[in-house]
Length: 373
Image 1 (cartoon, one colour):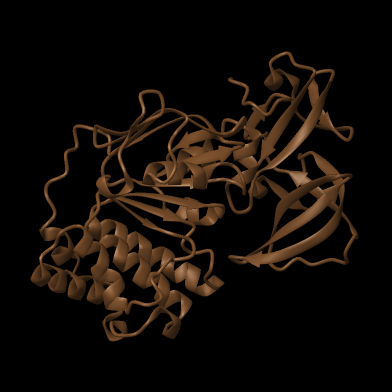
Image 2 (image 1 turned 180 degrees about the vertical axis):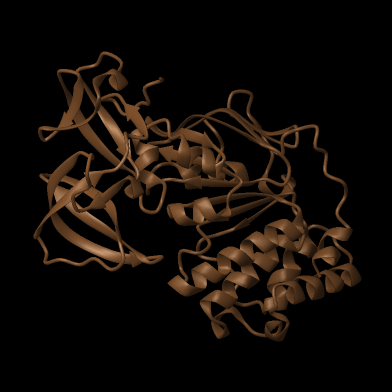
């Protein structure tokens, strides 16, 4: 079925980025929503825009879809400019060769499943026999052939999502835009649908842009990730690059399961200390009197370890993970996550000792930017 889905697609031009965003801005009156975004991805990429609520990721996706005009900057699909805020070039949504799956699915309630899929093909000028063949293909591909004569109100949320995806991929768009499509599903179905969306992405040979606030979704699905904060791209790159080489404390603490621990330290002689405990050589801070140290959860453990810095803390909670326990504890007002062997549990607020097994992974300045070394 995947071969059938891709056999009729014209060849992809790999000489141009599938998506290029250059100096993109969006303001609502005087309020900036997206500021100076620059992103470029090749054909077939799976780009995830991830960040907290209100960071501008859905506004950026709507500009890609042609539902919002940019205030400044440019968007190009396959080398073709589809939006330019300065010159006023705005291609309408229908002419962009892009399809969008909305968070609410936005199915037409008065149309059957078959009718929902048929309509965009009819609008695109497909002949009746070609529409019928294509509807059969996408229904079978998404395993919803039995639902073709049902209405949206007669099927489950997970089935509605499959119909929304089928409607979007039926015209074979070059760009797939997905706005938090899993947010309305229960936890188990979300996990199942992640794999399904990756399968769909690969089978359609489209370039996908996926919006989410869930960093687990971002890191498991993406080929490229843009972490957004307050309308700006905090860091852009491959998932492993962002995990291993975060350039800011925001990225370091937003990505990863569990997220990294960032500990503020002060210089005391030739050491960097927190709560009076020496953690690392002062030289790592590059002459600064204070800094912030990144420790992964696996680099901190519960209990005293010989030759390691040890710090008193109070136990908060723990959860089992792959034969270990992910333990959360407090050092004053600082929340830290550590790993312990086996199943670890203590009374809430009980005193524990934590040991730092290695030197810090990365050192940041007080503004949260990585210190080069």
